[in-house]
Image (cartoon, rainbow, N blue to C red; front, side):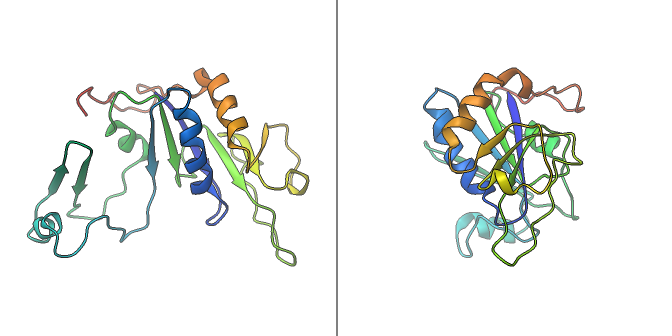
Length: 189
């Protein structure tokens, strides 16, 4: 399994970039999963649905499945912040790539997504200048990057180029379970 993170400020285009990269890799026969950090009160369930009712009744976990998909909802009795490595261990073992969005402080190789500021606005600071885990930059304005870099710089609107680079650099993104103290997921997940 190969793992790469996408880091950047809210609204910079991380989700859109990941959304465009997935079909590029799928066209190359790759299976892609995504781990995304969410804010405290997100929900994928809806009031009145069976699964929501089970959770409201106090179920610790609710799994809903069909012949097309599976969803697991787990309620934490106390606030709990799982590490990105714990979340990776929850994934199905048969995946080729995992894109991680929103764990900007993680120790995973990351692509920083940076947009040029609107006229009259100050630019967001960059991570690549101080984060050794940033291994490339995706931007809409390479000439406006506030700090020079020797890292690969990709056009934010050219996902095919980035996908090709990811595939060429594949071994660089191999996830080392032992290094992160996690157990490789079971094949049945």
